[in-house]
Length: 80
Image (tube, rainbow, N blue to C red; front, side, top):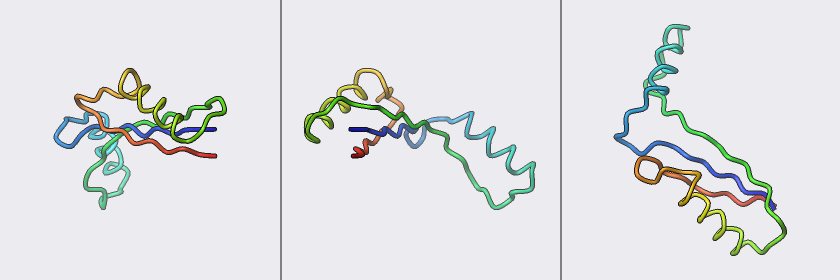
């Protein structure tokens, strides 16, 4: 089974990398871009297990390592 974790900064948290991307896009003439929020995607290959256990394991991984839950949100997608 595979899992995909999406991690992004919470609203209200300063995103300097997103601002830099936004500024660069505007400099390239993409003036319709109003704001950019940058995040990350983490793909995991998991040993065979049922969906419920897989989701619980990935949830623990997010809480303990993959996301800084003070300033970041995350979502989990399980892929077959």
